[in-house]
Length: 269
Image (cartoon, rainbow, N blue to C red; front, side, top):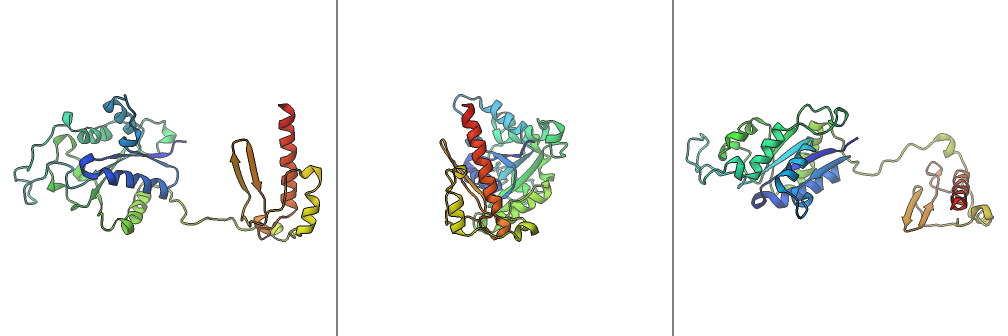
């Protein structure tokens, strides 16, 4: 299964810092997602157009960041009849336009089960620190349909309090799962909860047997079994969550099984 992938389209002189911040926030707050930002994905020697198109092809959604300098601005009014403040750039010389054109026209490059039920790529415009109005810009004909897409907005000043709700709305619209705000633990098993923990003196005596070589009492107080691997050493800490996070016969059985497995691996080497 492929992670749900976003491509962020932005103009470097307009919203480059926000692109990286948004990537971080999306990947931090949502489960099983990936965010492509060209400044990170590009490598020296790669053809810019081909690489960007490939990133878009592998994306389920394109986020279009729209700041004050996203496109040439109209010199006044909402009617759209005024003269543009700067000369519009054509699609062949404006990579932002090319990215959005390709996002709208190219198919999602995954097999059916990896498309998250999408028939076509989702386009998500987000206005950054400017009015949520497309008519303040001269929109090239090549992306004339973009203003019909429902847009979001966020300002630099309210970023800390607004970014969470913004990403939550994106998650709801795309049926994506949020990462839990806190650790989630299972309900204790009733049978294991009745298991009496082993007192430290008894544990200390048991762990002296050869079958438990390498195990020792650690009163650090870990809440759950933990594995840590550094080079060729694996450290495992065991407690029974259901029995108030104390060591029980279940932990001794698991430790015995792990030692037997380790010896079997060593014997084959």
